[in-house]
Image (cartoon, rainbow, N blue to C red; front, side, top):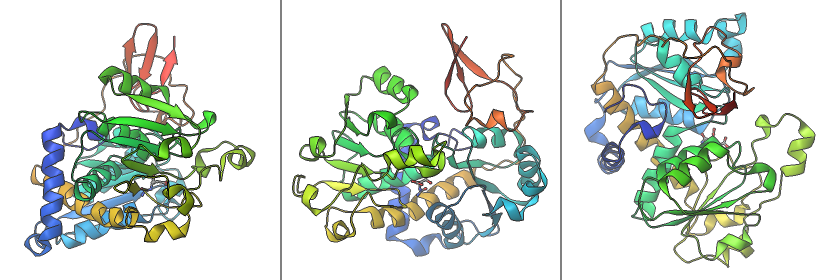
Length: 356
Ligand code: NCD
């Protein structure tokens, strides 16, 4: 692969995506061919935020490839609780392992970790920013279940502002020709402007609507997401947004017969359980595809594993990112790195804009 770390799926080209998707398919069909593919290698999972599927599918992926696993899923039981910096933890763990998967509540955390790691770093979710391996999972699911990645009308519903899986998936699907998007959310939870910039830059068609009913009849894929309670600043704010979108049997009657419903899970109340038996619901299959996707990824990243520290770049500006969810807010030693475009600075960690 062209990139040593996987921080954003868009750092890979489409040929590399297709190679990973096809490898995942091959592993699914012939798992026994891969039982020793990562023999002697160690995966470290550093999970600073709760997870069921992502962490367990990373771990199972490595075990099924014949490798071993170390890590924590509760920072309270590691030296993080004693105030250890991300930089120090990563430096140490990269001496113990051959590859690291990291999940952290702050945007840009995986990028920050990659500066100090001797081994490849995989972003397993950085705050509300990105979740590239979920996107790889989603692409494998669409490839397997719809047989195509182009020319689809894709509905995305729920917390489009805070849902990192949504951000990563839109970034990926707008690189395939002919895809258009129906973005279903309340006005308060619309997608961030940097994602709109990406859609506009590639000329992808999209519209924003308030209700599921407006979208149901003409979409080919529906990507449901939960309202991300933990990303709201207060419980009252969450209470105002929760429960707005519920996909039920009644709404399914409006949908095409070949619609596919995806959900990164966990589900809260946005899909009623009677939809689970509908053949168009593929969110449980999706979790299994995620394991094959991660097997394909780990295998490929380890293939080219060279132990070296990239090192942090030098600061490009003196300003500090103003996004309170950016990793630079808590890990103060990180260099201040921005992309400049006219009178706007774009933070290279969280991709938010700050005005000069
Ligand atoms: C998602 C995540 O953590 O962003 N879950 C997952 O990785 N499967 C979605 C979510 O938490 O809502």
